[in-house]
Length: 319
Image (cartoon, rainbow, N blue to C red; front, top):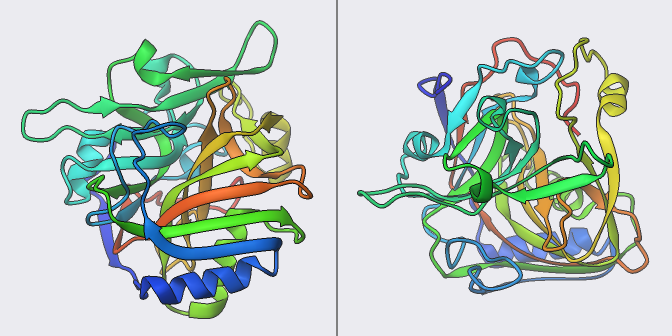
């Protein structure tokens, strides 16, 4: 595994859940016609529409930023492969459940693709349960091709970069977010992240969790199967290389967001989503704001672990 030993740990600010709910609701009401945020019991995530390999998001919550965009852009570092069982140990939480956004290992999959990680990592002799999805460009028609990872592969690898929320997968109290009819310019995730930054200032908070685009459509991208043969030096280069699609609800997203970078060269927000109708990829924002409707469950992380931080960095391609 690519330099997992280079791991930096940072303790995050964890506010009272009721307080954080009030802060987030106030911010969301500036961006959505209707918004409600409260502390609630996490639903059983093993059930539809989630069908995760664990019941909840609770128990020693933490996030990790693995690798990074500089390992993809300007040119791909195909040797950067990370095993999620090893990542869990780096997070001091072997057997963790992890969700989030990343890229597949092209060494394993044989191409480049978006990864929607949903993995209960191995522990005490119990094998890992990989519920992940991956999305690529269908070479037949150029459209989105979403597949269940375990239907094709039997490892828990990812490549280049990932932003993951990890926990023990236990039931418990979480932050429930409801929002509908977007009136502002920000996505649900960007609005929540900016609200935390505005309220908590120099304190660094991080949230991870899942949300459903319940109504309307959303914009996503999928990376091409082949890495760019030419350097991608600007955001315009990256945008031209990516393939953009509009997807339909219900669309189930996994998200990690950080209010402020404490000096670890973090990606401040990263969201991937899947569906049960064959669409998946990197989520940006809804495209039908007047009917957009969201339901999400999140939890603040206690720590962030920065794994294999790139020594040469830039800010291109982080949207």
